[in-house]
Image (tube, rainbow, N blue to C red; front, side):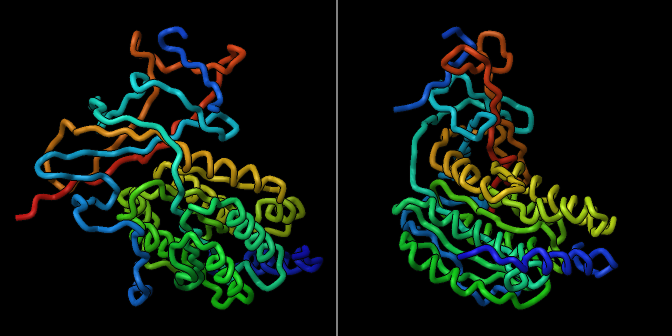
Length: 372
């Protein structure tokens, strides 16, 4: 696929329309050395099925926590990455601390490993920005195809596209040919609506009972024009689903280009800033990451960071001290600490230099409700 020369002109037309008022885009103790290891409008659509049998499975809450008999077991997948997005391995169990509603919990299960990914690729494909051969159209397809190329044979992937509504173009499968065939349908955008809230909540709900390392990779502008759900309701639903969101924001360089030349109005500028903030919020609160590339050369690094975060994780489990089955949301916080002094853990590289790191985990879960 070659890059079109007419994309900038078509992109300019979009920004001009938004700018003039078009409505819509509304090994010391306490130190660790990091060493490298050697389903609304879409109700009639079929639900994305779990690839795992539900037979003999324990009751599963909407956020991924499991509950057996009268004992609650909350499972939390945690990724610890450096400032380049690389996974940091070999952190001992004793350096992890989990608090639930600010109350420390005792970790009963702990493990680290690499496993296949189960990913729903959710793609904005609206006539709002993805007009045929526009710059945003080209960037959307480049990012989507590029991500598919990084998947391993054992990874499961589904492709979902959205404009006025979301549509499952291909269901979860390890056969990447099905995903590529689904992508062939993304040529001419139809509706000019971009209902991101509805699309990602619907996909997350469909994925909530899938076990293992799962995520939504969202490739979008972040603009939402006409969703039935509000931002707050979307945020709550995503927190409860337990599905991490890895968001890739589109048109960053194009926006800067027109903004610098006065071709983007103040309303459009605020809309896009809000869109970026929404994608950051959804990613952070679900234990994912957000990326806002300005250059095509950044895509391989982004795909590598997503792979690192999903394939390599620490799996933590605990029995919460609060055993109430009240259906309330419980806030979680995962920290790395030095057990000797209860201070933040200092991680160094092989040369002894301190490393900055980021902990990615879900923001909380909804407790089960007692059935009367």
